[in-house]
Length: 131
Image (cartoon, rainbow, N blue to C red):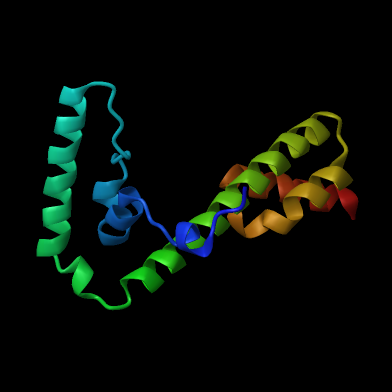
């Protein structure tokens, strides 16, 4: 079932928290509970974080939802890139073992600006072999 526009524009507290302080938000996870006591603890924690957001003026920004939408789009693009890179690395590792340098170049080349130092060295080697 496709979400409605209203549902698609809903943001989790972790997204709100991340937009305020990426470093502090890294360990944060949306709370889940299995007991009444757990729910009470989660509500207290959420209340404290919400008060902090209010105190920091997060909701004073009339562009807050535009910022959240842009942040979500950035996260989506980064996630897609990481996924594509992971797949390219797996394919290139196999191709490297098989000395299929054209395949290594084909799958890693488009991601050159995102590769590690050792991957860049491999790409240099591959280029020299393909000349």
